[in-house]
Image (cartoon, rainbow, N blue to C red; front, side):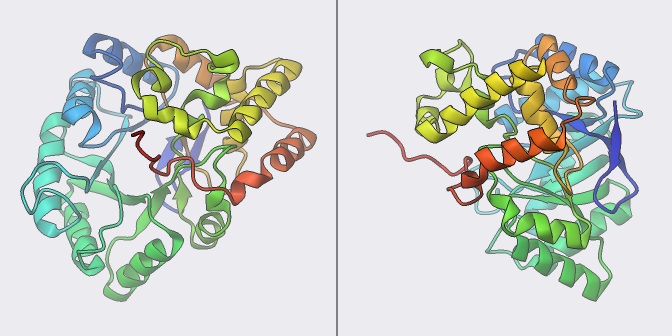
Length: 325
C-alpha cells in the first residue's frame, strides 16, 4: 500500500480508502466486518462513513469491527444531512453538530474521530458558527482534522478565510464526486485545491459500476445500484456507457481490470489524497488494491483524458436524477 498526506496536513492516508455506505444495507453486518478487517489487513487505513449511512448502521458496524483494534485506523465520518423531523436535526449549526458528534462517537465506539466532515454546505448557518464549533471539537480532542464534502471552491475558500481571520482550525480536505465520466471539479475545484493545499477525496470513483463493465450488454447484476435503485438508469446515458466499454477494452489491452484502470487514473490526478471505493465482498477489496501499484504511462493518461474531456463540462454524475413518473 502507498500512503499520502491528506492535503497539507501531517496525516498520512492510504491512496485507496474504503467507502462504507452499503454496510448494514447491501452488505449485512457479518459480511461488512469481514470486509473491514480484510481492508485493513490489505494496508487500507482510511475508512469513510457518515451518520446517515444505512440509518446509522454503517457507523455501528464500524464501531463493532474495530473495537479493540482502533490503533492505526483513520476513521472519517460526516454530519449535516437530515437525521430527523425536528427543526435542529439537520445542517451545520452548533446545536446539530454537537449532538451528532456525540452520537457518532458512541456508535463508532471511540473517543475521537480522525476526520470530521461537513456533509454538505449549509446556507442557513453562518460559516463562522460552523467553523468555531469544529474548532472547539478539535481543541477538545474529540476530532483531529476537519473536512468538507460537496462544497464548491468558493465555499471552501470562504471557510478558509474565516478560519484564517479568527485563528480557527482549517479544512484539510474536500470530498466531491470525481471519475473518468464526472470531471467537472477540474474546472475550479482542482486548481483551487492545488493552490490552497486541500486534499481531494473522490467519491463515486467507478460511477456506480459503469466504469467496471458490470452493465455491459444490458446486464443488471443482483445487488448493483441499477438493481436496487431503478432511478440509477437515468445516469446511464449513452456517452457514459460508451466510455465504460472503452475502459473495459483498454484495461484488457493493458492486462488489468477496468476497476483498477479507473481507480489508478484517479490516483494519478493532482491533489487527490485518497480514493474511496465501496466494497461488499472481500474479493472487491483485492480488485481495488490492484490499482495502487498500477502505473499508467503518459500515453495511456493522454488517451483517457482525451476520450473523457467532454465530462469536464457535462452535468455532474452525482446530480440528483429526475424521478420517473
